[in-house]
Length: 587
Image (cartoon, rainbow, N blue to C red):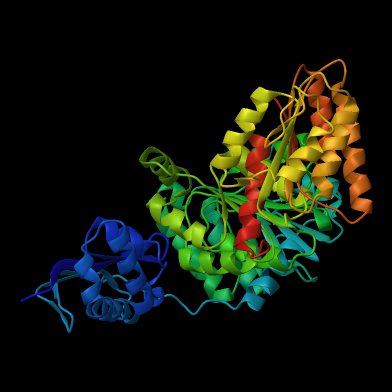
């Protein structure tokens, strides 16, 4: 029979709630896996497009002749898995495809007999309403509140009080009459006032009982600080509290978390250090240690945050719930998330794709390697999964993927500072040729485009630089030039409409000291802004320790700047570009 012989199949990726589809070997598997992240996306058009791609990369030219028949069989298989999600794997091997038909000679099906259908997902409005009860409560109970220094319940109480929370605080303790000046109650059911959320600071074995009382009190949110659940090989204990949460419609944050901060209402619902530096970045972490790193960096960098949230084991609330809340939060301009797994990859992808059109979403996915995945499992009970799958999901969702904790933090800090570029043309202006070379490499590494210098613009720049300098891109003004050379060249870069963003390379000299350079650049930026001209500018500063003060001054005035690094400023600019492209803001 003329035609082609191949294999086709589908594998449910349970960890992230995704589906991987394959056909015809490794090359086509990669094409199809990149085409969509669940079975409903596997249309005939996508399959035919993938078939064309395989022809271009060295596949069988005849394969396209059988494309319609092959597409039909894969679409039908995809629909089967959509209709019967208990199917874990379905393999057709071999499949004989001709121009008219495709026939499977053998089939292998693996079924999960313990599969439980997921309940209907909450609406976005319902998620936001319940998250507001947690993030912006009018009444808050501390279950396990304590007057004894060193106790978690004591730290939570002090942070709520010293942080300036203006809502009602209700300490819950079986024996105490008063804690830190607040009347104490034996149970949340003894409180006459309304309680929106409860912070748990009691051992894991007592959580279920206290959570039931919260349900009877109609409390809608629970912040579960205690550890000792799934991460400690106690899945039954975690399943019990999840079922209680479902029964009483309580949203659960945690367990195994440090709590959270929401600065617009001065809420520090945590046992960690209090935090009051307000800003526009909302950050979350699955790890307490990463959460503390976020706090320290934010304070040190004077970044400020709208929120810092711990997710821990993610028994209920996870990243997509936070995305829904921060999407509508006027205090948040960027969302940055550290995660070790995605509990529901499909829900995350849908939320991230929607939110990233409005606000940048940055994700640091930990557990990329087998060693990291093993560590994640023992840390938060996370199933880190296949990183290639995560890479596809994040990319398709418009998410900016950070490759390190430093990148996550720097992107959260730098992206909101800069205006959105209007085009792809990047220009480097540098006083150090060596920096210009490294900055050029970094531009390419971060998927940006160095502008090709038009002759008229080249001539315009040459009017401001010495004869031994170099126009082109980078524009090398040389190191011994006075401040006016930086001023004139940067003004030209900002006023020419063909240039869309600027990267500055500064070299510390006596002729142009670091702070003179920094003040001049801020003055130029502000002068142009007053005229309605705004473009993203980043800077790399090379020199003695004085460049550190200059870099900080630039950053505080809207120019992301870094001492001793040619990579970081370009990475931050590249992240801004990735978001702008994904959001359709660059034509």
